[in-house]
Image (cartoon, rainbow, N blue to C red; front, side, top):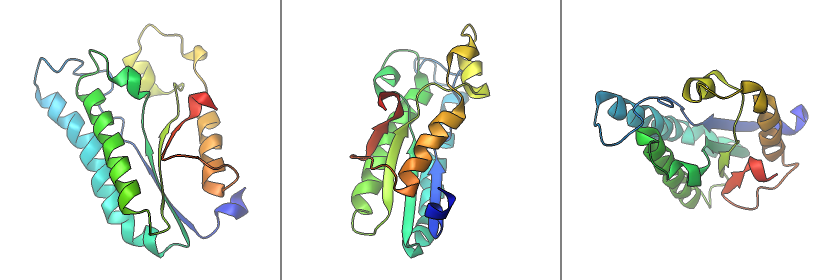
Length: 160
C-alpha cells in the first residue's frame, strides 16, 4: 500500500479538543469559545494553508475527521457538538470549491475508538469495548491509496 501513496500530498485534520468538557451550551464559558476555536478554526486555517501544496500534488487529499453527527445533535454535546457540525459544513464547502481541482475532500466518521480523548469523555465506559485506532487508520489508508472508493463526500466507517 505504501507505493500507492507515493506522490500524494495528504492532510488529515479533525481537532478533538474539548470533548468531555463544557457539555452544555446553556453555560457560555471561555471553554466553549476555546473548543470552537480549536476545532473549526484550526481545521479551516490548516486546510487553507495547505491548499497550495494539495493543488500542486498529482493526488492531493484533504480529509476531515467527523463524528456520528446524529449523536452530536443531541443534548449536552455543547461546543464540541456544534463545532463538529460546523466542521461537516466546512467539509461540504471545501468539497464543492475543490471539485475541479483534483483534490479529494472527504469527511470521515471513524466510529468509537480506544483513545485517551474518548476515555476522558466516557469515564464509565470499558475502553476494551472500543476498536483500536489502527482499524480506522487502515480503512482511511484504503481511501488514500485508491483501493476503496468513498462513494460520497461523507463516509461512516462504522457502516463498513
